[in-house]
Amino acid sequence: MINNNEHYSDPFAREEGFWNNVDNHVLRYGAPKFMPAIIDHAEGSYIYTEDGRKILDFTSGQMSATLGHAHPAIIATIQRSYPRLDHLFSAMLSRPVINLTTRLTSLTSDAMDVEGNHEKLDRAVLLTTGSEVNDAAIRLAKLVTGKFEIVSFNRSWHGLTGAAAAATYSSARKVGTPSMPGQIAIPTPYEYRPDFVDEHGKLDWRKQLDFGFKMVDAQSVGSLAACIIEPIVSGGGILVPPPGYLQALREKCHERGMLLIFDEAQTSIGRTGTWFGFESDGVTPDILTVSKTLGAGLPLAAMLTTTSIEQKAYEEGFVFYTSHVSDPTIAAVGYTVIDVIEKDHILASVQQRGKQLQDGLTRILNDHDIVGDARGRGLLQGIEIVEGNTSKTRSEALADSITEKCFELGLHMNIVCLPGMGGVFRIAPPLTVSEQEIDLGLSILDESITYVEKHR
Image (cartoon, rainbow, N blue to C red; front, top):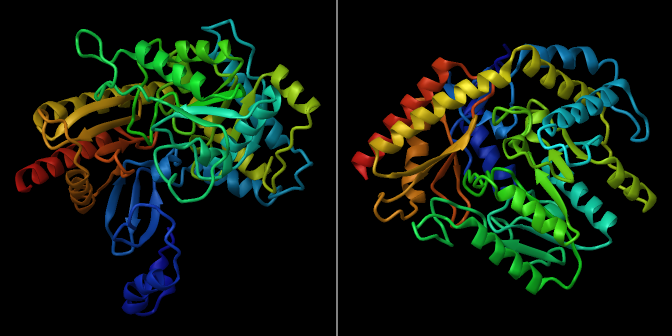
């Protein structure tokens, strides 16, 4: 393993010089504050700092290192593919691209067999990031429907470029510049903090959904194109819609001539224990986007839709022509990701490790007054930190302290730090995480919460 320390001859250059260069030359791009460590390398479920610390990675990088860091099969694919086909003119096609699109559409066809009343998602295009592919999906929906209004959750995160940013309500919205026209928000189902309740004080999601679309109808100028949502709302706090919600949402959309887009940046390619998040609800979208989990840490995304939608888009002159559409090397990596998941029976492992994680988080929930809720599915789960279970008041400060203690003890956790939504840990270790690593992460998390609870 290469040690980047070898490139520097004196301690000042390695440490103080590094942070001076950060202060003087790095544009602050809105991420949470930079972690107080210089990362040297990463392997498996761990990242390693220049000063020799070993940190268990419970975020899979930026949710994208699906198979852990530096997986041997991914390294071998890059070493084999890059010298042969690195990058091509965007109108040129190669076997790695067609192999991956064929395999992805086959997976979606298998996933939707339980439903049987929806046209197959058998057309795909390969792009780079989640923001980009969501822009493509929204552009496609607007062109095909001839309309422009887009509906999304009020706790949504779909990206920070153009249309994706316009459909994002959880953060980075109030920047003082115009957004895309025609954006409409509906309330997000949030069972721990219900806004519409039944006679038992539980979330009445049907009443909430009806209200949301009454507001949609009131605000619409008669040009409803699509609704874009995540099957599990990740950046908004690991919120799992109640059973039946997604089916009812699709009915609301189709009644109005809208297309339904599922943004599966974080719920696809095995993350929740199935190939796609929509499988758990038996609801297939009209357009599907996948990104983070497909590229094993490299920039790869895909948009999938039906033959009839693709044909209409083609006839209308659909254009989404980027420098890195259909890149061959990255496509080969995506194919390898799917191959490894199938051959190593990783879906079954995710279900087992997900149950282990869920049980551990439930124990932590029951043992600590400042843990208000535990939720999620597979290896995409979270806990919500509060001042106390009686008040249920969010506490970003306590969560930040837990984050710092976890890092000190050797665990990297991701805290949702969006305004008004803080205090929720997003726990998403690599799909290759071991039983022992789950236990270790839970132990460090429990110890950190205990420490913060005692010293607050």
